[in-house]
Image (cartoon, rainbow, N blue to C red; front, side):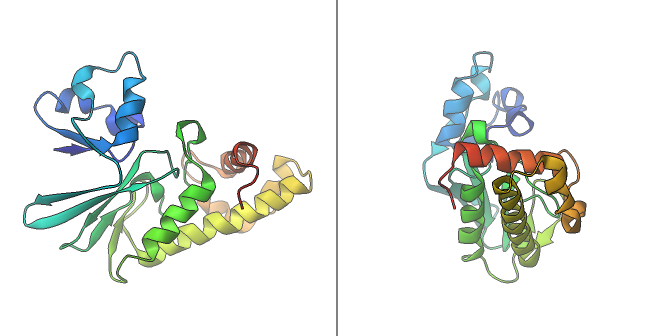
Length: 204
């Protein structure tokens, strides 16, 4: 069984190979978006989809797969290994780095934050967290990631309201420069917040 946590190619690109002999699982919107890719092989389409949540029983563990709406994309899954006390957060967790939020594929910054806040309220204190990007973490790492997203979004929004350019806004984010790593640097994080505000002008 292969579980796609969302639609991006680095998560679904192996589907055509694995789908020949295995069952691919994903949230409903992942299959819909893959169907809209004309060149995507039929063998790679998820065979089992779910809307809100799904329960699996593997190797003596109960695995709960839950949909996170309108966050990184509109088809994200978080995977909770209940007996092992481990949660795989997919691309909702970039440990120590700014995340990528794909507005064109149904994501939003507010949804991303809301999803993580909701998840944090349900997880045990000693849970181990698996990010899609960065080292293995714990609940404090996940909490720190949400707080950093919230604070930096507020700084960027204030800069936008004050008609500052990106370089001027970046100067106000120097305390968070270490979070601008990998393919989401400070400049790209600012552009994501700008795009999100244009797409969702009424979001708080």
